[in-house]
Image (cartoon, rainbow, N blue to C red):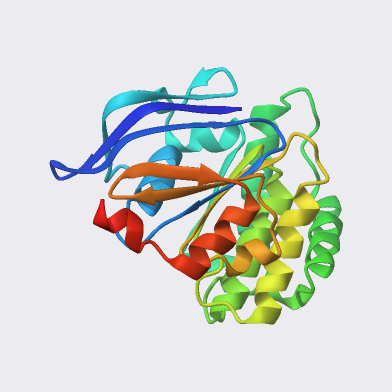
Length: 250
């Protein structure tokens, strides 16, 4: 599904990512762990098309297409999704309106032969998804993320993922700032998506806590812009216990 080859990324001429190689197959969950400043968020933001990052070398292929040649909205339309570490607020736009607009744009791009969903049908779909995530359906009438707690913002991100049904979700420290109950709900939302065999995810995290609930197929350690070691889910526990000191000394 995703093949990253010798990817180098710079910000204002400073190289942050220094030659990443990574392959994610359909149905796989990969986790990237590492200390702060190792380039994890830079990687996923660049994959989504953030204009503040410059790819200086390497290639990224997503579902047979040159991902780097696509604009951010085109990356979303072919099935890429980014859950932000710090979700933005959008004043004056209700969550329902935001999601309905995104849903229509996605469906039109992916299934041009299909008739666009009516507002009534979408309302039913949205409320069904919200209830499955234990979200109060009244949240749909609130402005996007405005006045939401940290956990509510992250649940709203997972709700977007359920509505848009991406092929590959990039989750940038989605566990940041969550209490245990909110973490479990977010994890359940991701695990529900795994029932779709074509769904994959790249989970970026600083701690192994979320990996107690989202079970990755592969865990990678990223230090100083490079993947320095990879392993199974059990490897994440080793990292939690031992930290990153041995990688920082090399």
